[in-house]
Length: 266
Image (tube, rainbow, N blue to C red; front, side, top):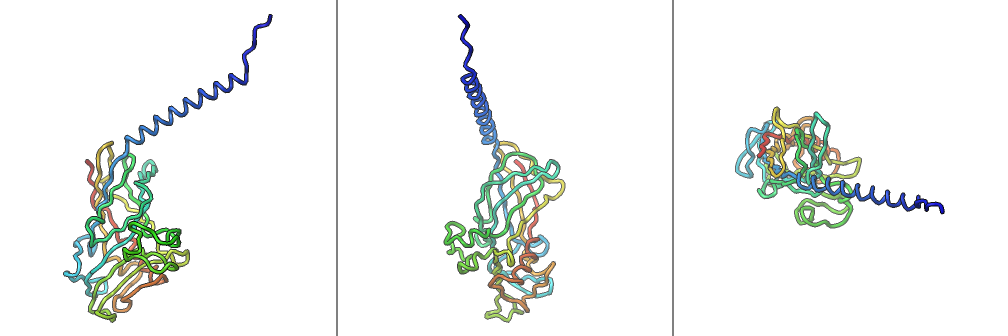
């Protein structure tokens, strides 16, 4: 009597099952390693005037822009999201945190510190998006920092104010010598959404270790709203309250207002 031959189909199924179990075990191991490797990042935003040298104060201090126009600031706020960290040597990119939006309002100190998580590594570049993506501008009422009650939303057809600067100036022809720059626009032809990329000051880097924290100090210079590449004089343009060319010019100016001034690793 011939010995019974093994069932080839059954052997293939067993082999496939063993391979699947091996792959799942490997994936679980990798997920566990990544989960324990998460590192805390703390971004601290600080308002300054004139090339990061003077800390900005609300209402009480008079400053001058590039055109020698005196002004005081009463409001300074903006939306940021989609944080990433880069290593320019290895070209590694890591997302920091999730896709949450943050409203940095310099009148509220709690909003100027943003805490994120990222996988430990050495990084020397921080990137983020300034503004609110187009889909959320046409998705109806939002909650949290995107709640219209935050004062950063126009009508449904014009969407969010991405950034806001308000104050007073003796050269302003508006009532009470005020100036108000409410910068928005999400449609392609009028978009003011900006990708910000900040190189760390040499030779500072994020040198991450599991379970430790890195603090990054970032300045936002209100001086940059008024010039380079576009000249924005308060005496000529004391108010921007809708999307358009002037809003895009101001957004192009302030997109360079950020600088990483210090990195502190635990």
